[in-house]
Length: 160
Image 1 (tube, rainbow, N blue to C red):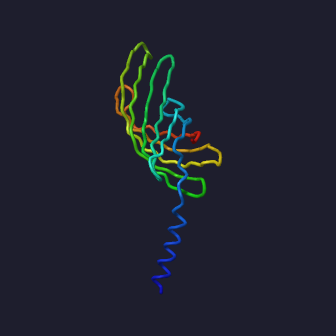
Image 2: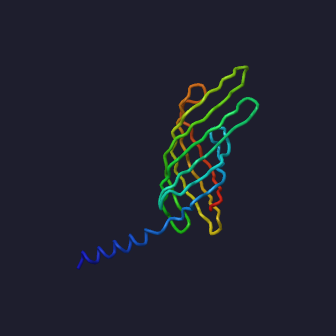
């Protein structure tokens, strides 16, 4: 009898926690943070499965002394918190290019990076998503950056 009651309770709890994720097929918007002096990024999310998605972010900088771009792809696992709140964690990598013309020193090249991602998001009843995430990035290029960069960003995306 005890085994039947315990099994029933476990099945009921599992049933309540297995709500469908609110992951849109596509989401497009901006990810606004420091981004290693790139500033904002154009952000796109693509639904892969019930709990997974791919996020692509493109950041660029065009100033008097530095022109640069960075493209990052992150595979994310999305977990439901409650109602329209989700939290997610991911890992990925990226590439970029830079042209630094400061101090009469023309320095240009490309770089690679690995990145992690952890954040929380809210999906409104309208097709709008707000997120806050933390992304550590480890870059590999002595001339541009060869260390760990930490980025906190606010994302706003249109879901479709």
